Amino acid sequence: MLKGFKEFIMRGNVVDLAVAFVIGAAFVKIVESIVAGLITPLIAAIFGKPDISDVWTFQINNADFRIGLILQAIFNFLTVAAAVYFVIVMPLNKLAERRKRGQEPAPDDEPLTTDQQLLTEIRDSLRQRS
Image 1 (cartoon, rainbow, N blue to C red):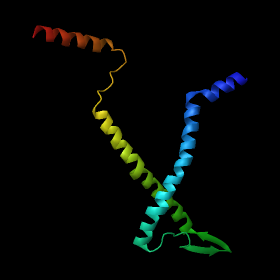
Image 2 (cartoon, helix red, strand yellow):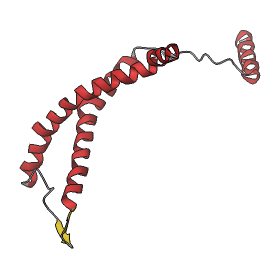
Image 3 (cartoon, rainbow, N blue to C red):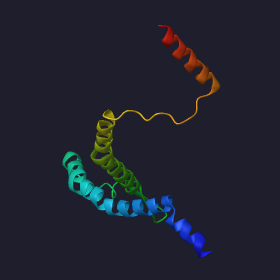
């Protein structure tokens, strides 16, 4: 029983997931600082107010409904997603493209079908005749 648990824990995808979780938790601080230090003040400078959670409230039978709170959560999600995309994902994609330019594509490891083998033989024999 313990052997199976050890194999499960030491499996590559479990370890990768644990590492990704720890890195993601540490990465939250970077994203929060970008949003709090750059994007939120920019929004406040443009619209005059960085937080809309107390806007658009109404009451029905002494129950408070805060539409602004929902809109603020959606806005926060979109700003975090934009910060992650434009500051991290897009530059890393550009870097990956630059690295791939110098590399040749990997050959296919799949075996050729009989049709493909036949066409390859025909092509090779036509090349030999020319």
